[in-house]
Length: 93
Image (spheres, rainbow, N blue to C red):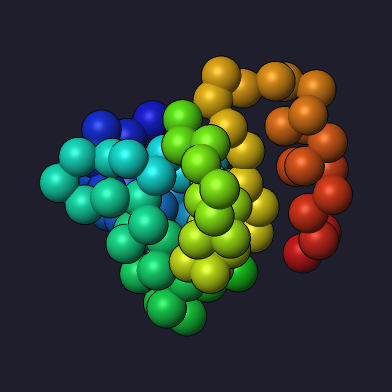
């Protein structure tokens, strides 16, 4: 599933219950930071793992993503091998 903004993300996640969310943190209308907070606050979606994907590679961005309840963080451009390792390291539920 591909979404165009944070609001779209929330509605599509509610409809489809994905096994993993790759959240762009710089989405229009509703940023990925806030969309993740809302997903993790909802009993129906809180257990879905979220990996933050962002071009932000500034000091503190990883910590901010984890404080937002993302399960992990990765930067763009994506290194597929690194990202797959992070996905495989997620707790299996």
